[in-house]
Length: 134
Image 1 (cartoon, helix red, strand yellow):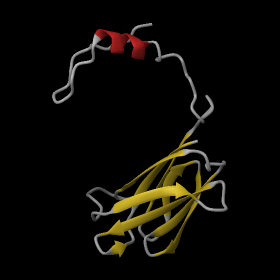
Image 2 (cartoon, helix red, strand yellow):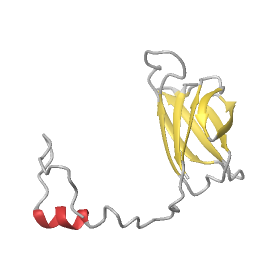
Image 3 (tube, helix red, strand yellow):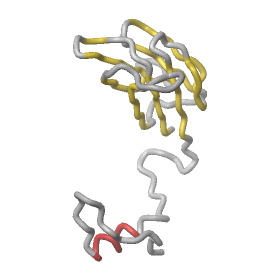
Image 4 (cartoon, one colour):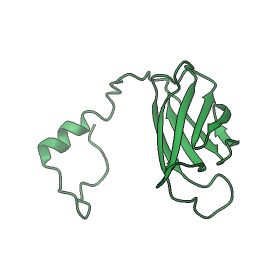
């Protein structure tokens, strides 16, 4: 089934050719899983710089392990999941201090994610948002 979306190009992107658009359209309903089951859930956590779990879906706890190092636990195995993290405010509005975030499976704990936050000088406590597709 072809996509009902228009095929207009976006500024800065090359327009797809007809053959590529047709090929991609055939993948819309294929649900070809690459490592994740069709029953995959989107989990998330919003964590304050001190390690407090502010809110989440499927998140059960968060712990500050050391400066800029955190563990976020979930209610299911997330060892083979996909992770996306971003530095961002945990409460209220505004922006968090600038920083960089890295995420990885937690060594030895299948239902947790290891998160590091950094500033220019190295590890630094930052609030963050973590999304997990498991």
